[in-house]
Each structure stands twice: as structure tokens, then as C-alpha cells.
Length: 169
Image (cartoon, rainbow, N blue to C red; front, side, top):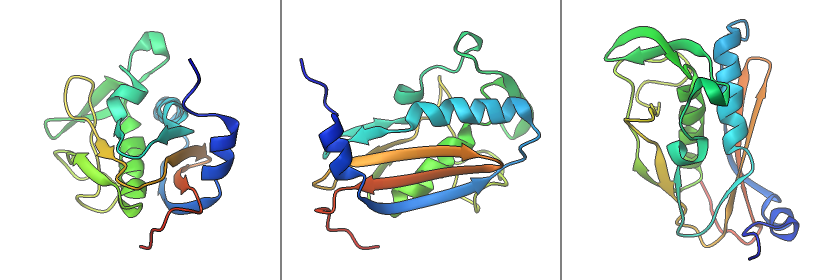
């Protein structure tokens, strides 16, 4: 069996950045930053083929201590509390804004029960292993490459594709 993604395909689809989105966070909250980096690493370099559906929960997986996730602030039913993997909604929200600008079909997205500081109102995408997911479908005729980077106090997601992709924002 051959891999779906090879170096030739990656070389072809990383040529044209079709969208990006940046959010900011307090880099002194070490546990939250650690969780953001783990989730970011999980989605980095994911390729979404034409007609394929991307599921944040499926790609990132269950957030557990054994996978390295730490307790950090989470919002549950409008209240702030501690939870394993706190902070990863910043990754899903940054991804939502980046892929929404890339013209994908958003299939499933839920907002938090209270406003979050890292995106404008109603531009967030809350995720939970046993609850909400963030999913979208690539309706373009070319694969999309998701690049996710955490640097300093920034969460950066860029979406690339082939020069053959005819997409204007």
C-alpha cells in the first residue's frame, strides 16, 4: 500500500497560500501553551483531499494525561474550570477561521457558552472529546495542506494548495 501523501504531492500543494489566520495567547500560562502546541502539532501538515472531511477530534484524538495533555482552564456550561487539554479550542478556533477563509464547507462548528478573547464573537469553534467537534469538507478540486505553528504568543494556521486551485476570496 502506498501513502496518500508523498513528497511530490507536498511540493505541488505547498506553493500557493490561499488563507491564514493568527490568534494570540499569554505565553506565560505554561500548561495551556503546552496543550496548544500538542494540538497544533497534531494538525500540522495534514492534507485534506478533494471531497474529504476533516474532523478535529479524529485528527487530534482524545486529550488525555497519557498523551501529554495537562490541566488548564476550560469553559464548561458557561463557567471557567480546569480540564485536561484546556487551551486546544484556540487551535480549533484558529483553524476554523483559516479554513473558512479558504472556501471550504463547514459541516460542524459550535461556539463556546461564553465569549473567548482570542477571536471575534461567534468566530470560535469549541471542541470536546465527548461533545462538539469541528469538521469541514474540502470542496475544491485540489488537496489542501494545513500548516500549524505556535511561536511565542501566537497560534498561526496557514492553508496551502496547488497553483492549479482557482480560488479568490
